[in-house]
Length: 115
Ligand code: 5GP
Ligand code: ZN
Image 1 (tube, rainbow, N blue to C red):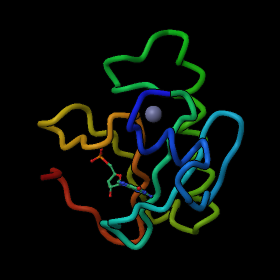
Image 2: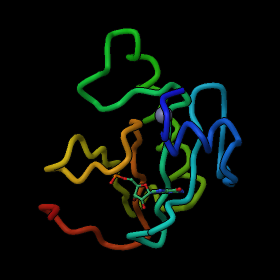
Image 3: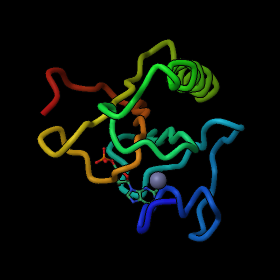
């Protein structure tokens, strides 16, 4: 585990965190600073720094992330209205945690284009 990776520490149980959902590939957390009525983080268990660091070995993992997103949105009752899956990559996009993750946002109208 890389030093000081907050998501690796949460996944390892070193920092307390409640998993909204988990399986062998991902954990899902409620964002501590929610930007919508539903704001979850889908976090691969594997430490990958950014989207740019993905390789073909991760293809199935990323497909799984989106399948989980759709299933959770359905279970939350926001799939029909609409929701958004967001990955911020590197500083100009607003990435602040250097362990790849995907925001699942919904429960309100989401503006476009994003800020
Ligand atoms: P980023 O800005 O990298 O795309 O997203 C990081 C997200 O992680 C932010 O929305 C932030 O609120 C959230 N976050 C940061 N630290 C923690 C934490 O310790 N626990 C949880 N659940 N979310 C966190
Ligand atoms: Zn990590």
